Amino acid sequence: MDTPSPAMRPTVKLERQTGLHDNDSRFVEEVIKVISSLNGSSTMKLKVHSKFATKFTLIIQDPPRMNMDDMNQIFLMNSKIISIKTDLSDSQLRIEVLKHSESSEKKRKRAAYDEYDVPDGYDLSMVDGRDKKHIDGILRNLLGMTTMEFTSKIVPSPTHYMLEVEDIEVLDMEYMQEVVQKYRAFITTTIFDYPQKKLKINIRRNDTPITQIIAQRKKVKLIQ
Image (cartoon, rainbow, N blue to C red; front, side, top):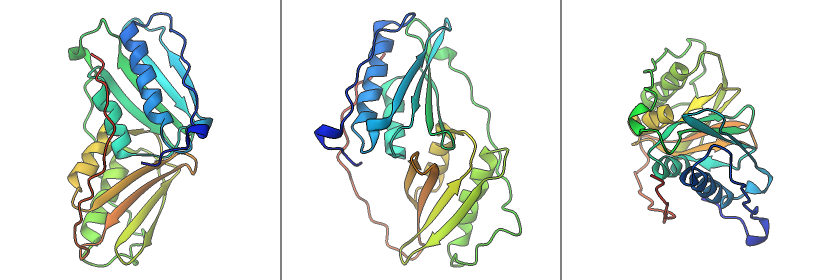
């Protein structure tokens, strides 16, 4: 996780929102503090929609580059989160949350997604035969999450492949969590690069030794 210099960090100012309990406002503040600690966060903008009786939506426009750990950290901060969705094309992160007075048992149930075959014309010539199965599987899952075609390319290196995806529709972060968990032996990093409007997935080559890097994570506050 990149950390900006103190001079580049945006000041977090949030007026109390009409219709929000103090706990809800506190959650919004904590989310912004987490994201504003990332490099490149000085240009992001914040909106909160709270007119609905049972839920509110936090919209972050032009967020910085975020990884899957950053998204997971937000999920852990509030048990009432309904969904976290990322729109890379519009450089937007949307977090939908039940209001403080609502039971978390009312959270919307997600529909399962399917896997779709990778088109026959898709070029995997740069992928080693030992790696095609899991790369094909990752692509099948991404295709199953979307209804529109997206642009992608695979950039090989001696130790890994970088899968770069553009022009992809809104992604549900819970689905992305499932994909990363399913291929955790091969996916080493997942980057939501909002400035470049790209999803970047670093995929380990089958013959590259697995190394485990334990990063020190920031403590998070759980908003009940």
